Image (cartoon, rainbow over all chains, first blue to last red; front, side, top):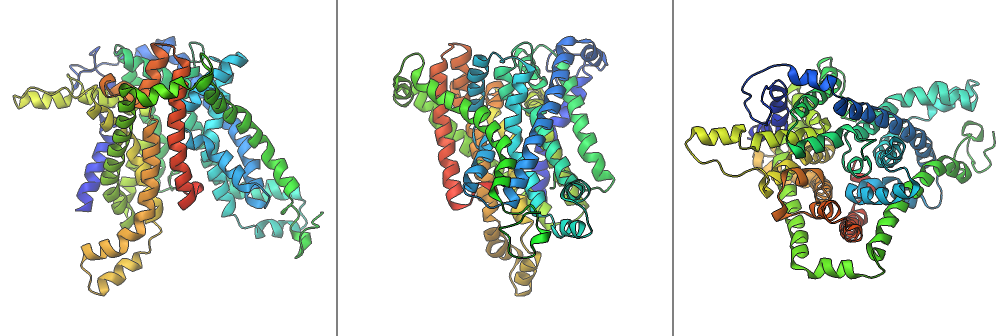
Length: 255
Length: 287
């Protein structure tokens, strides 16, 4: 009985992904399903269209930079947070989790106001700043969790064997924490890559991201290339998450 | 190294428990979040009662105009429906994944993850196709000789889209708790003669309730402020607060009023978070 419900729920979850693939090969210019005919024309259109390729490139650049900045800020912070006792710890915890608790529309309005005052609304730089703040909480939680599960006797062993603190950090601590750090970085990248609300508000014309372009294309309901983009994005997720499972590796989302 | 505050084995714990070091490590991130997250949110607050002039008119309008109060009620009602639907669909799914530890549960888990990581817009677009008047649902009605109902751009389609997007959050929240329930408890109940439903009701269900609370709070708060899906799949007739904010900005350029709506939304979600933090602890929510 529960199994039946589970199958229904899962079918409901992945039904959209099965629609998207045939749609991308459809010859129809509207959202008709099942498609009337099949071709590769909209794939060619995607790879020839600056309207789609530039937002794609923007999204990759923004997600990569936001991920790097996030990790640079979050890794030291997690060390400070987990390994030390200090006054105001609860407040710091709240501060680092705050972007998760605030609805993205609210943050988006705030960023629009602040960044337009600074003259960086509609720039890639402005988006990197905003997206970094939004991706910090989850990365912080993941790195903190990794640190809490870390056996400090490893460090003590390295020290007593004569390694200095820096050497211990780079040769013992960091390699042991690497899986946690990689998962945190992946979360930061995907969070930014998929984020749409802030990108819609402050992306403007010059820093349009893929989700922004998709939003606009769905709204106008004229551009069948959206199906191609959706299929490519689904394909990437399948490659990143399903393939590791097939090779019996623990998938990354089961942290 | 210096370890003046440490009493036991000082030589081996060189970087421990000095709050100066803690602050050195925490300052860059904290400063970033204060300047580039807290300040923008503060700006919204400021905007809500200073734009175009200093007054509380926007808030008075929100709470006294029937149109806007109905938007508030609709936002709550929709979020409640979405949360309950996610719970109804998500609980059996999480139960199956947690209880069976085999290939089947791995397949379910992988498919939930696949859905989770596929962006909102991909799935929102797919629902536009599925529910559209040239889509498979309409075609099925046609085959049966029935007039297909208007599904798209109704509160039904926007609710469906949101349940689809938020269900994985619910499943993960439930799973993180269910995974920790000792399977021996269920075996013990069975060996003492409890039929499966009784064992579930008296042993498993109570232990899984923290997951139900976590998942519901998470889904409900995200749903309150959901932006993309209600705008793309919903109808202006049954607006949620985010649609109203979007309309105020796009059609009327009423930044002050939009900011006031955002502040109301923020106040409601903060209230829920504070309540949750009081009883459970905020860092457990995404655990």
